Length: 83
Image (cartoon, rainbow, N blue to C red):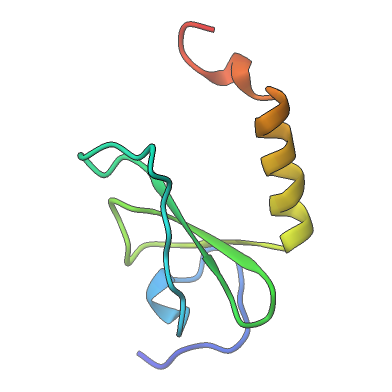
């Protein structure tokens, strides 16, 4: 497969050339986590670590920044089991 230069939601993560995937140190050993990668055009890709060849979601840095701020502020705590 040839790498694509334009990034789009749902594209195979294997097409994201040069992506260096990172995951949180809070990830569990079973691999139930998400991984993120900074892309050459400034976007951020997200994939399921259990399916690294699967689809990636692509967001702007502003979208990821807003999400991270929301996580830090507890905006999504009610989505977790037992909360």
